[in-house]
Image 1 (spheres, one colour):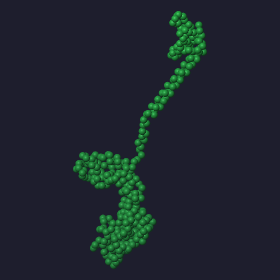
Image 2 (cartoon, rainbow, N blue to C red; image 1 turned 180 degrees about the horizontal axis):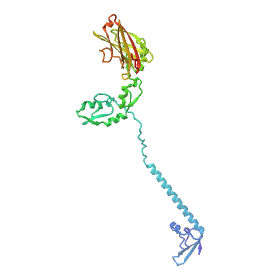
Image 3 (tube, helix red, strand yellow; image 1 turned 90 degrees about the vertical axis):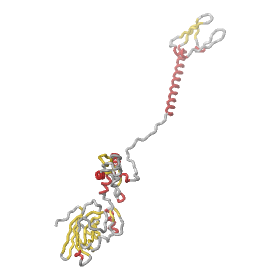
Image 4 (tube, rainbow, N blue to C red; image 1 turned 180 degrees about the vertical axis):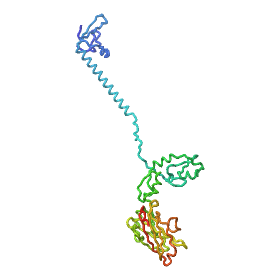
Length: 357
């Protein structure tokens, strides 16, 4: 019986032929159970004698610790390799493009031909509803489709088929007023454009002074006339009677209210062989409310009087026969003694009715 003081891998054979080193395989050593004593039986090839070896527990524990350390080191190395492989895979992955989500913010669109949203028949701005012909989809506004009944482009009938696509464009399109250059800052959907512009307070009005081509909104025009043509108008006040001198062949007179600056035009139209047709107009957008006025002409016991309402006009119209509006017809006899006539006049503000006589 021999006790080993070195690991099994260093055991030498005692035969005369020399020593031999036979390390025990690690798999075999790792599978050995732990015990307090270890016995190794070796069969001699020559004489068949058996040798038993016993090993101390300390030596076996040392071997097991070394093997466990190697095993843990191998596991750590494998995990490290796996981590590196994952990193390589991540680097090799193609990054997806970072698309921004579609926004609901409005976009700006420029129409090179604004007339594309006008009715091709009446050339007015399209308004909802919009109708299209049955065969080819040519569009027309509601007013035109109800009047002509047939498409002027292809003679196809206009039925009840509406062009929803263009209606949607009108509803979602925002535009500015065409009077923006005169001071209007309003914006509206395209289908409301015509409605707004018909009653826009910044509709342009023309200066009535001869030779002046100034055009501006009503209020700016009043300021312009009060500043640049201060001596060209007769100043008056609402509710108060005042007199003016009208020459027989004088086409018009300019009157301006002192407080508000509103401009009125006293028009004088000569009717050959009859006399003079006289009436009062207000220089302002056509949609604005009228003002009431009273005209009185006197001569040698004769009195002519007219009480009526003004018509709103954005510009002065020169010449021409008297319109269908109310006017005071002054006979030729009133100008017999002179080519001029004194006329008394009273004016009331917009919406104020004159007193009942």
